Amino acid sequence: MFTLDITSTTLTVRYERWTRLFVRRARTDIPLAAIREAVPVAHPLSQARGLRAGIVVSGVLKAGTWTGFDGVTRLVCARGGEPGLRIVLDRRIDGVDELVLSLAGAEEVRHRLAGTAA
Image: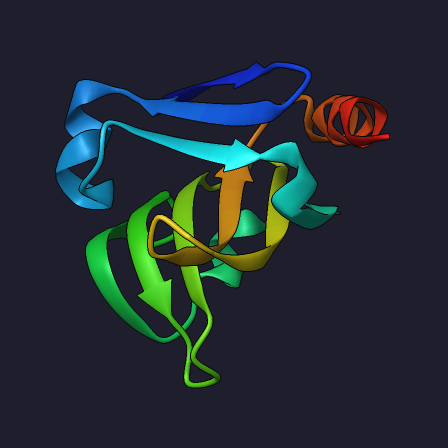
C-alpha cells in the first residue's frame, strides 16, 4: 500500500500505484515539527469515519480520505487484522488533518517519530 521514509525533518509516505488511485496522490510529505501526536491504534479501519473518497472492502481494506462530521479529514491506508498508527497534525497539510496507516511496527515508528522530532 505504501512505504515510509523518516528523515531528521520529514515523514514521507509513498503510495503504491494502485493506492494512488484512491488517495489521489503519489506521496505525502509531513514536516516532523507539524506532527502533534502519533497514537498506536489496534484497529485502524475503525478510524475511518464520515464521508469518503476512496475504496472500502468491508473488514479488509480502506484507502482514501474520510471527512468526519467534526470537519477532520483523515487520509487512510489500512488493512484489517493489522495494527496501525494515527498521526495527528497541528495544521492541515496536503488537504489532510490526520493520517491513519496500517503498520506492523507501529510502536517502533512512533518511537522513531518522537526521537527525530525531539
